[in-house]
Amino acid sequence: MAISGDYKVGDLVISTTGRDKDRCYLVLTVDEASRLGLVDGRVRRVENPKQKNSKHVKHLNLQAEELASKIAAGGIPSNLEVRKVITELTANLGED
Image 1 (cartoon, rainbow, N blue to C red):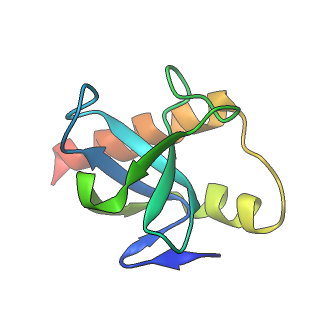
Image 2: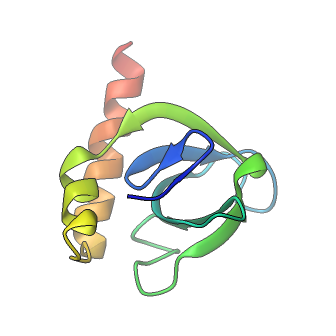
Image 3: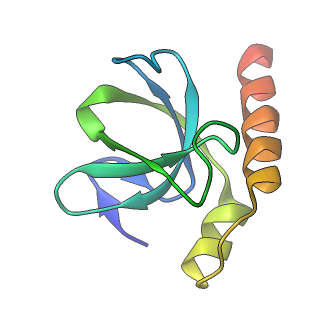
């Protein structure tokens, strides 16, 4: 699993700049140039992740471990799985 700063595959992040400000994403890919491949399962699907600089997102300290392990094993999550996980993790944000 690639790591860039504090970001790992499967982390839940929120965009802080741009047209997509305040939108939640899951980190699908991380490269050494601090670029993240972000997906939400709707607008940014697994087939076409949004490339965003890690400076322009905020880490929410939540991770989708089951999707991260699937990706680490070489699998690709479906868009439905991504949407489901984002919904579950963001529901947990409101409970804190």
